Image (tube, rainbow, N blue to C red; front, side):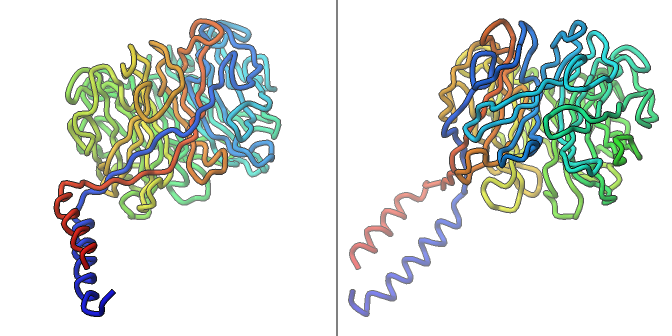
Amino acid sequence: MKPNQLPALFALSVLLGLLISGCEETYTKEVDEDQKISDSRGQFSGDLDDGDRFGAALANIGDLEGDGVIDLAVGSPYDDDNGENRGAVWVLFLDDDGQVDTQQKISDSKGSFDGDLDDGDLFGSALAPLDDLNGDGFRDIVVSAPMDDDGGTDHGALWVLFLKDDGTVESYQKISEESGELNENLDADDQFGHAVANIGDLNNDGITDLAVGMPNDDDGGTDRGAVWILFMNSDGTVSARQKISSEKGGLERKPNDGDRFGSSVTAVGDLDDDGVIDIAVGTSGDDDGGTDRGAVWVLFLNSDGTVDGLKRISHNRGGLEDQLSDGDRFGSALANLGDLNNDGNDDLIVGAPGSDDGGSNRGATWVLFMQGDGEIISASKISDTEGDFDGSLNDNDQFGSSLAGIGDLNEDEHQDLAVGAPFDDNGGTDKGATWILFLGPTESHYDTSEGIIFGSLSSAIQQQ
Protein backbone atom coordinates (compact mmCIF):
# COMPACT_ATOMS: atom_id res chain seq x y z
CA MET A 1 0.00 0.00 0.00
CA LYS A 2 1.33 3.43 -0.95
CA PRO A 3 1.44 6.18 1.72
CA ASN A 4 -0.84 8.45 -0.36
CA GLN A 5 -3.58 5.78 -0.24
CA LEU A 6 -4.02 5.98 3.56
CA PRO A 7 -6.05 9.23 3.68
CA ALA A 8 -8.47 7.89 1.05
CA LEU A 9 -8.95 4.60 2.90
CA PHE A 10 -9.54 6.45 6.16
CA ALA A 11 -12.15 8.69 4.57
CA LEU A 12 -13.90 5.71 2.98
CA SER A 13 -13.97 3.80 6.29
CA VAL A 14 -15.47 6.81 8.09
CA LEU A 15 -18.14 7.19 5.39
CA LEU A 16 -18.92 3.47 5.52
CA GLY A 17 -19.36 3.66 9.30
CA LEU A 18 -21.69 6.64 8.97
CA LEU A 19 -23.82 4.83 6.40
CA ILE A 20 -24.08 1.71 8.56
CA SER A 21 -24.99 3.77 11.63
CA GLY A 22 -27.77 5.41 9.62
CA CYS A 23 -29.31 2.07 8.65
CA GLU A 24 -32.11 0.52 10.67
CA GLU A 25 -30.89 -2.51 12.61
CA THR A 26 -33.33 -5.35 13.21
CA TYR A 27 -33.00 -8.73 14.90
CA THR A 28 -34.19 -12.29 14.42
CA LYS A 29 -34.16 -15.39 16.59
CA GLU A 30 -34.58 -18.93 15.26
CA VAL A 31 -34.73 -22.45 16.66
CA ASP A 32 -31.53 -24.48 16.58
CA GLU A 33 -32.94 -27.73 18.03
CA ASP A 34 -36.11 -28.89 19.78
CA GLN A 35 -37.23 -31.56 22.21
CA LYS A 36 -40.85 -32.54 22.80
CA ILE A 37 -42.15 -33.71 26.18
CA SER A 38 -45.47 -35.53 26.06
CA ASP A 39 -47.20 -38.78 26.92
CA SER A 40 -44.88 -40.58 24.50
CA ARG A 41 -41.86 -38.30 24.10
CA GLY A 42 -38.96 -36.84 26.07
CA GLN A 43 -38.62 -39.67 28.58
CA PHE A 44 -41.65 -38.43 30.49
CA SER A 45 -43.13 -41.39 32.35
CA GLY A 46 -45.99 -39.66 34.12
CA ASP A 47 -49.53 -40.92 33.61
CA LEU A 48 -51.54 -38.52 31.43
CA ASP A 49 -55.20 -39.01 30.51
CA ASP A 50 -57.27 -37.70 27.62
CA GLY A 51 -58.14 -34.05 28.16
CA ASP A 52 -55.52 -33.34 30.87
CA ARG A 53 -54.02 -30.47 28.79
CA PHE A 54 -50.48 -30.96 30.09
CA GLY A 55 -48.58 -27.81 29.09
CA ALA A 56 -51.40 -25.33 29.76
CA ALA A 57 -49.01 -23.49 32.11
CA LEU A 58 -45.22 -23.41 32.53
CA ALA A 59 -42.73 -22.02 35.04
CA ASN A 60 -38.95 -22.09 35.35
CA ILE A 61 -38.42 -23.19 38.98
CA GLY A 62 -34.64 -23.03 38.97
CA ASP A 63 -32.39 -25.93 39.87
CA LEU A 64 -34.61 -27.46 42.54
CA GLU A 65 -32.66 -30.69 42.98
CA GLY A 66 -29.20 -29.11 42.74
CA ASP A 67 -27.82 -31.03 39.74
CA GLY A 68 -26.84 -27.93 37.78
CA VAL A 69 -29.82 -28.09 35.34
CA ILE A 70 -32.93 -25.89 35.38
CA ASP A 71 -36.17 -27.67 36.32
CA LEU A 72 -39.68 -26.97 35.04
CA ALA A 73 -43.18 -26.90 36.50
CA VAL A 74 -45.95 -27.84 34.05
CA GLY A 75 -49.66 -27.31 34.62
CA SER A 76 -52.24 -29.95 33.79
CA PRO A 77 -55.45 -28.22 34.92
CA TYR A 78 -57.94 -30.80 33.68
CA ASP A 79 -56.37 -33.68 35.61
CA ASP A 80 -58.97 -35.77 37.47
CA ASP A 81 -57.08 -36.94 40.59
CA ASN A 82 -59.77 -37.39 43.28
CA GLY A 83 -62.38 -35.57 41.20
CA GLU A 84 -63.24 -34.10 37.81
CA ASN A 85 -60.98 -31.30 36.54
CA ARG A 86 -59.43 -30.62 39.92
CA GLY A 87 -56.07 -30.11 38.22
CA ALA A 88 -52.42 -30.92 38.81
CA VAL A 89 -48.86 -29.64 38.46
CA TRP A 90 -45.95 -31.76 37.27
CA VAL A 91 -42.44 -30.90 38.51
CA LEU A 92 -40.04 -32.02 35.77
CA PHE A 93 -36.40 -32.56 36.71
CA LEU A 94 -34.73 -31.97 33.35
CA ASP A 95 -31.55 -33.13 31.69
CA ASP A 96 -29.57 -30.60 29.66
CA ASP A 97 -30.89 -32.15 26.43
CA GLY A 98 -34.44 -31.13 27.36
CA GLN A 99 -35.59 -34.62 28.26
CA VAL A 100 -37.02 -35.59 31.65
CA ASP A 101 -34.83 -37.28 34.22
CA THR A 102 -37.58 -37.77 36.82
CA GLN A 103 -40.92 -36.16 37.63
CA GLN A 104 -43.10 -35.45 40.64
CA LYS A 105 -46.85 -34.83 40.46
CA ILE A 106 -48.67 -32.42 42.77
CA SER A 107 -52.43 -32.88 42.88
CA ASP A 108 -55.32 -33.54 45.21
CA SER A 109 -53.84 -36.98 45.93
CA LYS A 110 -50.10 -36.66 45.21
CA GLY A 111 -47.00 -34.69 46.15
CA SER A 112 -47.84 -34.26 49.86
CA PHE A 113 -50.35 -31.53 48.98
CA ASP A 114 -53.46 -31.67 51.15
CA GLY A 115 -55.03 -28.38 50.22
CA ASP A 116 -58.78 -28.49 49.65
CA LEU A 117 -59.40 -28.77 45.89
CA ASP A 118 -62.91 -29.18 44.45
CA ASP A 119 -64.21 -30.45 41.13
CA GLY A 120 -63.65 -27.90 38.39
CA ASP A 121 -61.08 -25.76 40.26
CA LEU A 122 -58.54 -26.16 37.40
CA PHE A 123 -55.54 -26.08 39.73
CA GLY A 124 -52.47 -25.64 37.50
CA SER A 125 -54.01 -23.18 35.02
CA ALA A 126 -51.19 -20.68 35.65
CA LEU A 127 -47.81 -20.95 37.35
CA ALA A 128 -45.05 -18.66 38.54
CA PRO A 129 -41.79 -19.15 40.44
CA LEU A 130 -41.53 -17.32 43.76
CA ASP A 131 -37.79 -17.63 44.37
CA ASP A 132 -37.25 -18.80 47.96
CA LEU A 133 -40.11 -16.91 49.59
CA ASN A 134 -39.81 -18.49 53.05
CA GLY A 135 -36.00 -18.66 53.13
CA ASP A 136 -35.65 -22.43 53.53
CA GLY A 137 -33.18 -22.80 50.66
CA PHE A 138 -35.66 -24.14 48.06
CA ARG A 139 -37.51 -22.26 45.37
CA ASP A 140 -41.27 -21.96 45.85
CA ILE A 141 -44.08 -21.63 43.32
CA VAL A 142 -47.51 -20.12 43.02
CA VAL A 143 -50.26 -22.16 41.33
CA SER A 144 -53.59 -20.76 40.22
CA ALA A 145 -57.04 -22.31 40.52
CA PRO A 146 -59.11 -19.73 38.61
CA MET A 147 -62.39 -21.61 38.93
CA ASP A 148 -62.20 -21.90 42.73
CA ASP A 149 -65.49 -20.93 44.40
CA ASP A 150 -64.29 -19.22 47.59
CA GLY A 151 -66.72 -16.32 48.02
CA GLY A 152 -68.76 -17.19 44.92
CA THR A 153 -68.83 -19.09 41.64
CA ASP A 154 -65.48 -19.04 39.80
CA HIS A 155 -64.09 -16.17 41.87
CA GLY A 156 -60.68 -17.84 41.63
CA ALA A 157 -57.71 -18.45 43.91
CA LEU A 158 -53.94 -18.87 44.15
CA TRP A 159 -51.98 -21.49 46.07
CA VAL A 160 -48.47 -20.64 47.28
CA LEU A 161 -46.58 -23.94 47.51
CA PHE A 162 -43.42 -24.13 49.61
CA LEU A 163 -41.47 -26.95 47.96
CA LYS A 164 -38.92 -29.54 49.02
CA ASP A 165 -35.97 -30.44 46.79
CA ASP A 166 -37.81 -33.56 45.57
CA GLY A 167 -40.71 -31.49 44.21
CA THR A 168 -43.17 -32.40 46.95
CA VAL A 169 -44.95 -29.80 49.06
CA GLU A 170 -43.62 -28.84 52.50
CA SER A 171 -46.49 -26.44 53.25
CA TYR A 172 -48.87 -24.08 51.45
CA GLN A 173 -50.90 -20.89 51.71
CA LYS A 174 -54.10 -20.17 49.81
CA ILE A 175 -54.94 -16.68 48.56
CA SER A 176 -58.60 -16.07 47.73
CA GLU A 177 -61.52 -13.92 48.75
CA GLU A 178 -61.63 -15.91 51.99
CA SER A 179 -57.95 -16.72 52.59
CA GLY A 180 -54.47 -15.23 52.63
CA GLU A 181 -55.45 -11.69 53.63
CA LEU A 182 -56.45 -10.65 50.12
CA ASN A 183 -59.25 -8.63 51.72
CA GLU A 184 -61.03 -7.88 48.45
CA ASN A 185 -64.48 -8.73 47.12
CA LEU A 186 -64.39 -10.57 43.81
CA ASP A 187 -67.31 -11.21 41.46
CA ALA A 188 -68.73 -14.33 39.85
CA ASP A 189 -66.57 -15.52 36.92
CA ASP A 190 -63.74 -13.06 37.66
CA GLN A 191 -61.33 -16.02 37.54
CA PHE A 192 -58.72 -14.41 39.75
CA GLY A 193 -55.49 -16.25 38.92
CA HIS A 194 -56.11 -16.81 35.22
CA ALA A 195 -52.52 -15.52 34.88
CA VAL A 196 -49.78 -14.95 37.45
CA ALA A 197 -46.19 -13.68 37.36
CA ASN A 198 -43.27 -13.05 39.67
CA ILE A 199 -42.48 -9.33 39.23
CA GLY A 200 -39.60 -9.05 41.66
CA ASP A 201 -39.55 -6.79 44.69
CA LEU A 202 -41.63 -3.85 43.47
CA ASN A 203 -41.87 -1.99 46.78
CA ASN A 204 -38.30 -2.76 47.96
CA ASP A 205 -39.26 -4.58 51.16
CA GLY A 206 -37.07 -7.59 50.38
CA ILE A 207 -39.96 -9.90 49.40
CA THR A 208 -40.97 -11.01 45.91
CA ASP A 209 -44.28 -9.57 44.66
CA LEU A 210 -46.85 -10.90 42.19
CA ALA A 211 -48.97 -9.68 39.31
CA VAL A 212 -52.24 -11.59 38.87
CA GLY A 213 -54.37 -11.49 35.72
CA MET A 214 -58.15 -11.49 35.86
CA PRO A 215 -59.32 -11.10 32.22
CA ASN A 216 -63.02 -11.59 32.93
CA ASP A 217 -63.23 -8.62 35.29
CA ASP A 218 -66.06 -6.24 34.38
CA ASP A 219 -64.76 -2.90 35.68
CA GLY A 220 -66.08 -0.36 33.17
CA GLY A 221 -67.60 -2.99 30.86
CA THR A 222 -67.96 -6.69 30.10
CA ASP A 223 -64.73 -8.76 30.16
CA ARG A 224 -62.49 -5.73 29.99
CA GLY A 225 -60.15 -7.41 32.44
CA ALA A 226 -57.85 -6.39 35.27
CA VAL A 227 -54.48 -7.05 36.89
CA TRP A 228 -53.85 -7.18 40.62
CA ILE A 229 -50.44 -6.25 42.02
CA LEU A 230 -49.97 -8.25 45.22
CA PHE A 231 -47.33 -7.12 47.70
CA MET A 232 -46.42 -10.32 49.49
CA ASN A 233 -45.41 -11.43 52.97
CA SER A 234 -42.78 -14.17 53.37
CA ASP A 235 -45.45 -16.60 54.65
CA GLY A 236 -47.37 -16.38 51.35
CA THR A 237 -50.08 -14.04 52.59
CA VAL A 238 -50.80 -10.63 51.06
CA SER A 239 -49.47 -7.48 52.70
CA ALA A 240 -51.12 -4.97 50.35
CA ARG A 241 -52.68 -4.89 46.89
CA GLN A 242 -53.35 -2.57 43.96
CA LYS A 243 -55.87 -3.19 41.19
CA ILE A 244 -55.24 -2.00 37.62
CA SER A 245 -58.38 -1.85 35.46
CA SER A 246 -60.61 0.53 33.53
CA GLU A 247 -61.57 2.16 36.81
CA LYS A 248 -58.49 1.78 39.00
CA GLY A 249 -54.72 2.03 39.04
CA GLY A 250 -54.12 4.99 36.73
CA LEU A 251 -54.54 3.50 33.23
CA GLU A 252 -54.64 6.45 30.84
CA ARG A 253 -56.26 4.30 28.17
CA LYS A 254 -59.14 2.00 29.10
CA PRO A 255 -59.57 -1.53 27.77
CA ASN A 256 -62.63 -2.15 25.61
CA ASP A 257 -65.37 -4.69 26.24
CA GLY A 258 -64.05 -8.17 25.48
CA ASP A 259 -60.38 -7.12 25.42
CA ARG A 260 -59.52 -9.54 28.26
CA PHE A 261 -56.75 -7.37 29.67
CA GLY A 262 -54.87 -9.68 32.05
CA SER A 263 -54.91 -12.75 29.80
CA SER A 264 -51.21 -13.04 30.64
CA VAL A 265 -48.61 -11.04 32.54
CA THR A 266 -44.83 -10.90 32.98
CA ALA A 267 -42.16 -8.58 34.33
CA VAL A 268 -40.08 -6.74 31.70
CA GLY A 269 -37.37 -5.28 33.89
CA ASP A 270 -36.97 -1.54 34.34
CA LEU A 271 -37.48 -0.50 30.73
CA ASP A 272 -37.64 3.25 31.36
CA ASP A 273 -34.76 3.31 33.87
CA ASP A 274 -36.76 4.98 36.63
CA GLY A 275 -35.75 2.43 39.27
CA VAL A 276 -39.13 0.63 39.26
CA ILE A 277 -39.95 -2.72 37.64
CA ASP A 278 -42.30 -2.58 34.65
CA ILE A 279 -44.70 -5.26 33.40
CA ALA A 280 -46.27 -6.48 30.17
CA VAL A 281 -49.92 -7.53 30.11
CA GLY A 282 -51.58 -9.65 27.44
CA THR A 283 -54.93 -8.53 26.03
CA SER A 284 -55.84 -11.51 23.90
CA GLY A 285 -59.27 -10.22 22.82
CA ASP A 286 -58.01 -6.88 21.48
CA ASP A 287 -59.55 -6.10 18.06
CA ASP A 288 -56.93 -3.70 16.72
CA GLY A 289 -56.76 -4.52 12.99
CA GLY A 290 -59.37 -7.29 13.22
CA THR A 291 -61.29 -9.63 15.51
CA ASP A 292 -59.35 -11.14 18.45
CA ARG A 293 -55.97 -10.38 16.95
CA GLY A 294 -54.69 -9.57 20.42
CA ALA A 295 -52.23 -7.14 21.93
CA VAL A 296 -49.61 -6.61 24.63
CA TRP A 297 -49.74 -3.59 26.91
CA VAL A 298 -46.43 -2.46 28.44
CA LEU A 299 -47.15 -0.75 31.76
CA PHE A 300 -44.57 1.54 33.32
CA LEU A 301 -45.27 1.16 37.03
CA ASN A 302 -44.89 3.26 40.15
CA SER A 303 -43.57 1.51 43.26
CA ASP A 304 -47.11 1.43 44.71
CA GLY A 305 -48.35 -0.66 41.78
CA THR A 306 -50.17 2.14 39.96
CA VAL A 307 -49.45 2.93 36.32
CA ASP A 308 -47.23 5.83 35.30
CA GLY A 309 -47.53 5.28 31.52
CA LEU A 310 -48.24 2.64 28.90
CA LYS A 311 -47.56 1.51 25.35
CA ARG A 312 -49.60 -0.93 23.26
CA ILE A 313 -48.10 -3.48 20.89
CA SER A 314 -50.71 -4.74 18.45
CA HIS A 315 -51.43 -5.14 14.75
CA ASN A 316 -51.23 -1.39 14.12
CA ARG A 317 -49.24 -0.12 17.11
CA GLY A 318 -45.91 -0.37 18.85
CA GLY A 319 -43.83 -1.48 15.87
CA LEU A 320 -45.45 -4.85 15.06
CA GLU A 321 -46.82 -3.42 11.77
CA ASP A 322 -49.53 -5.54 10.15
CA GLN A 323 -48.24 -8.97 11.16
CA LEU A 324 -51.30 -10.42 12.95
CA SER A 325 -54.46 -12.12 11.67
CA ASP A 326 -58.00 -12.51 13.01
CA GLY A 327 -58.21 -14.99 15.86
CA ASP A 328 -54.45 -15.12 16.57
CA ARG A 329 -55.03 -14.16 20.23
CA PHE A 330 -51.56 -12.62 20.41
CA GLY A 331 -50.84 -11.97 24.10
CA SER A 332 -52.43 -15.16 25.42
CA ALA A 333 -49.07 -15.98 27.02
CA LEU A 334 -45.99 -13.93 27.91
CA ALA A 335 -42.49 -14.54 29.22
CA ASN A 336 -39.34 -12.51 29.75
CA LEU A 337 -36.31 -13.86 27.82
CA GLY A 338 -33.74 -11.44 29.16
CA ASP A 339 -31.64 -9.12 27.00
CA LEU A 340 -31.18 -11.11 23.79
CA ASN A 341 -29.46 -8.40 21.74
CA ASN A 342 -27.38 -6.81 24.50
CA ASP A 343 -28.96 -3.37 24.20
CA GLY A 344 -29.84 -3.05 27.90
CA ASN A 345 -33.54 -3.91 27.52
CA ASP A 346 -35.23 -7.19 28.43
CA ASP A 347 -36.94 -8.86 25.48
CA LEU A 348 -40.24 -10.74 25.40
CA ILE A 349 -41.72 -13.91 24.02
CA VAL A 350 -45.46 -13.70 23.23
CA GLY A 351 -47.86 -16.56 22.52
CA ALA A 352 -50.44 -16.48 19.72
CA PRO A 353 -52.09 -19.92 20.07
CA GLY A 354 -54.79 -19.13 17.52
CA SER A 355 -52.31 -18.58 14.68
CA ASP A 356 -53.07 -20.61 11.57
CA ASP A 357 -49.50 -20.94 10.28
CA GLY A 358 -49.42 -24.39 8.67
CA GLY A 359 -53.00 -25.21 9.70
CA SER A 360 -55.93 -24.16 11.87
CA ASN A 361 -54.96 -23.05 15.41
CA ARG A 362 -51.55 -24.69 15.26
CA GLY A 363 -50.23 -21.66 17.14
CA ALA A 364 -47.14 -19.49 17.14
CA THR A 365 -44.80 -17.53 19.38
CA TRP A 366 -43.24 -14.14 18.73
CA VAL A 367 -39.87 -12.91 20.02
CA LEU A 368 -40.13 -9.13 20.58
CA PHE A 369 -36.91 -7.14 20.75
CA MET A 370 -37.87 -4.28 23.05
CA GLN A 371 -36.99 -0.60 23.22
CA GLY A 372 -36.91 1.42 26.41
CA ASP A 373 -40.08 3.28 25.41
CA GLY A 374 -42.13 0.06 25.33
CA GLU A 375 -42.25 -0.25 21.55
CA ILE A 376 -40.35 -2.90 19.63
CA ILE A 377 -37.30 -2.78 17.40
CA SER A 378 -38.38 -5.89 15.50
CA ALA A 379 -40.28 -9.16 15.93
CA SER A 380 -39.30 -12.71 15.03
CA LYS A 381 -41.94 -15.45 14.63
CA ILE A 382 -41.63 -19.16 15.51
CA SER A 383 -44.37 -21.39 14.14
CA ASP A 384 -45.05 -24.44 11.98
CA THR A 385 -43.76 -22.48 8.98
CA GLU A 386 -41.34 -19.91 10.43
CA GLY A 387 -38.33 -19.57 12.70
CA ASP A 388 -36.60 -22.77 11.53
CA PHE A 389 -38.79 -24.81 13.89
CA ASP A 390 -39.15 -28.32 12.47
CA GLY A 391 -41.22 -29.88 15.24
CA SER A 392 -44.42 -31.51 14.06
CA LEU A 393 -47.50 -29.43 14.92
CA ASN A 394 -51.07 -30.45 14.14
CA ASP A 395 -54.29 -28.49 13.79
CA ASN A 396 -55.55 -27.14 17.13
CA ASP A 397 -52.35 -27.94 19.08
CA GLN A 398 -52.39 -24.27 20.16
CA PHE A 399 -48.60 -24.07 20.46
CA GLY A 400 -47.87 -20.86 22.39
CA SER A 401 -50.64 -21.22 24.98
CA SER A 402 -47.97 -21.02 27.69
CA LEU A 403 -44.34 -19.91 27.79
CA ALA A 404 -41.31 -19.92 30.07
CA GLY A 405 -37.76 -18.75 29.61
CA ILE A 406 -35.50 -21.55 30.87
CA GLY A 407 -32.08 -19.93 30.64
CA ASP A 408 -29.25 -21.60 28.75
CA LEU A 409 -30.29 -25.21 29.31
CA ASN A 410 -27.72 -26.79 26.97
CA GLU A 411 -24.92 -24.34 27.82
CA ASP A 412 -24.37 -23.04 24.29
CA GLU A 413 -24.47 -19.40 25.46
CA HIS A 414 -27.97 -18.79 24.03
CA GLN A 415 -31.25 -18.48 25.90
CA ASP A 416 -33.71 -21.38 25.58
CA LEU A 417 -37.48 -21.56 25.81
CA ALA A 418 -40.33 -23.85 26.89
CA VAL A 419 -43.60 -23.63 24.92
CA GLY A 420 -46.87 -25.32 25.83
CA ALA A 421 -49.17 -27.03 23.33
CA PRO A 422 -51.97 -28.22 25.65
CA PHE A 423 -54.20 -29.64 22.92
CA ASP A 424 -51.52 -31.92 21.47
CA ASP A 425 -52.79 -35.46 20.90
CA ASN A 426 -49.65 -37.56 21.55
CA GLY A 427 -50.97 -40.70 23.21
CA GLY A 428 -54.58 -39.51 23.30
CA THR A 429 -56.94 -36.60 22.72
CA ASP A 430 -55.79 -33.31 24.28
CA LYS A 431 -53.29 -34.96 26.58
CA GLY A 432 -51.01 -32.02 25.86
CA ALA A 433 -47.31 -31.42 25.35
CA THR A 434 -44.43 -29.09 26.13
CA TRP A 435 -41.74 -28.18 23.61
CA ILE A 436 -38.20 -27.30 24.71
CA LEU A 437 -36.74 -24.96 22.08
CA PHE A 438 -32.97 -24.55 22.01
CA LEU A 439 -32.62 -21.14 20.40
CA GLY A 440 -29.80 -20.09 18.12
CA PRO A 441 -27.84 -16.83 18.26
CA THR A 442 -29.53 -13.47 17.88
CA GLU A 443 -28.94 -12.36 14.30
CA SER A 444 -28.72 -8.66 13.44
CA HIS A 445 -29.68 -7.26 10.06
CA TYR A 446 -29.28 -3.88 8.39
CA ASP A 447 -31.46 -2.16 5.84
CA THR A 448 -29.29 -2.36 2.71
CA SER A 449 -31.28 0.12 0.64
CA GLU A 450 -27.96 1.97 0.26
CA GLY A 451 -26.43 -1.11 -1.40
CA ILE A 452 -25.25 0.80 -4.45
CA ILE A 453 -23.30 3.16 -2.25
CA PHE A 454 -21.82 0.25 -0.30
CA GLY A 455 -20.90 -1.38 -3.58
CA SER A 456 -19.25 1.80 -4.77
CA LEU A 457 -17.35 2.03 -1.51
CA SER A 458 -16.17 -1.55 -1.84
CA SER A 459 -14.99 -0.92 -5.40
CA ALA A 460 -13.22 2.27 -4.36
CA ILE A 461 -11.43 0.49 -1.51
CA GLN A 462 -10.31 -2.30 -3.83
CA GLN A 463 -8.90 0.27 -6.25
CA GLN A 464 -6.72 1.88 -3.59
